[in-house]
Length: 146
Image 1 (cartoon, helix red, strand yellow):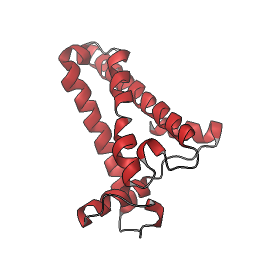
Image 2 (tube, helix red, strand yellow):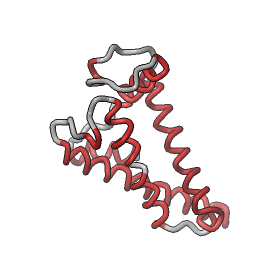
Image 3 (cartoon, helix red, strand yellow):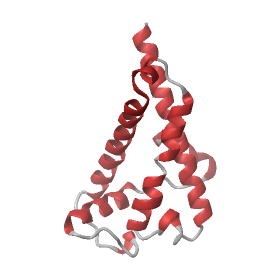
Image 4 (tube, helix red, strand yellow):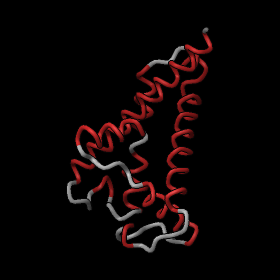
């Protein structure tokens, strides 16, 4: 997903996700603020960029674990693209229903300037994540087979 973000920037001039804003949103949750009108107008918090990046990777690792829990050793021993893409596309529900509304963007980015474009980009990003899950499983499986 991170390599895809770099490629999107180069090919389409689309900015990558600002993980500092995600970190800001997460850092406000223990302070009792889950929903913001617009996260960018909320006061910056210490280490929000680090918090955002850590969350990004920890959530991704959690989703990978969910893939292996749901599809088990069979998938781990013989990775198939279908289950990985299914998990990848399902993960788009988290930003659509939790993160984007919490950050002030509305359900499925409904309060953004271009909601349909934002939705399409989110869906593509999460499909790419699913493809990354598959490729990671394939690479790990191939390395153990040697």
